[in-house]
Amino acid sequence: MTAQLSDINNPETLMALTKYLRMVNYLGAAQLYLKDNFLLESELKKEHLKQRVLGHWGTVPGLNFIYANLYSSKKTFPKNNACSWARSWLSCPACQSLC
Image (cartoon, rainbow, N blue to C red; front, side, top):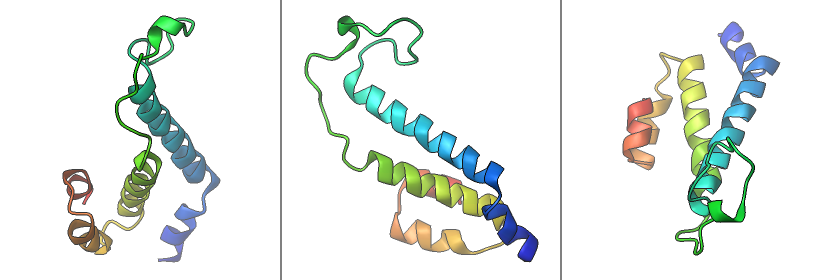
C-alpha cells in the first residue's frame, strides 16, 4: 500500500494532472468565448470571438478537478471502492464511466 501512496506524490504524476487541468479548463473557456480557431492554429483575431457569450464559466473548473482526481485515484487504487460513493453522490454519466 505504501508504494501506491507514493505515486500520488510523484512529481511527474502531479505535473501530468496539472497539465491536464490546464488543457480542459482552456477548452471549457474556448467553448464559451471562441466560435473558431479553438486550437489557436492561427493568430487570434476579433472574428474568432463570439458576439454574445451564451452560458457561464460557473462550475467548469470544479467539475474538471473532480473528474481528474477521480480518474487519478482510480488508476492509483484500482481495487479501492472509492468510486462507489461517486456514483451515488455525483450520479452523472461522466463519473459513472470513470468508475
